[in-house]
Length: 153
Image (cartoon, rainbow, N blue to C red; front, side, top):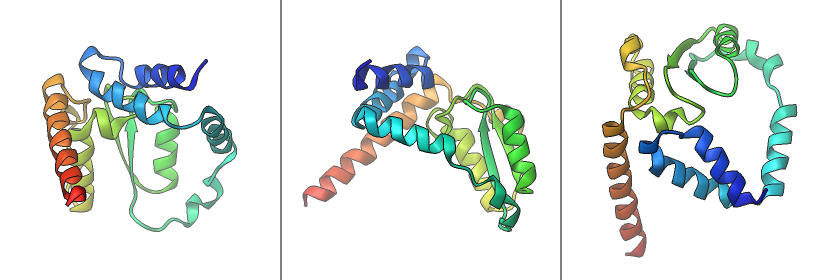
């Protein structure tokens, strides 16, 4: 399988909904720029890598944001949060790209955590709607355009 084809397949698994086409295209573009051999080496390294023996030494407050449909199980995320003595929020409907397909839930969770407020209610911990995703995409495009203009000056 070619690198570009593999990237498209990966992106399609992350962002399968028709209205997520922009996210899917961007993920395929970014992942597709990585040579397949490097990507495979990274995946193999991540499979061997672990920090589990050092989790007990973490003393800072910790927030674990888990996607309901991530590659790892929710039970693993619950165990991680427990070992870190941290907070856990589960974003319903999200996959591995939670900061991208659930930006509202991610941002609300981070803001609550950083300001010592309670976590958002369950009904706000959901994947973005098509309208929200379109609005975020428009803002992202506007910001990228302004950054490009600033770099050209």
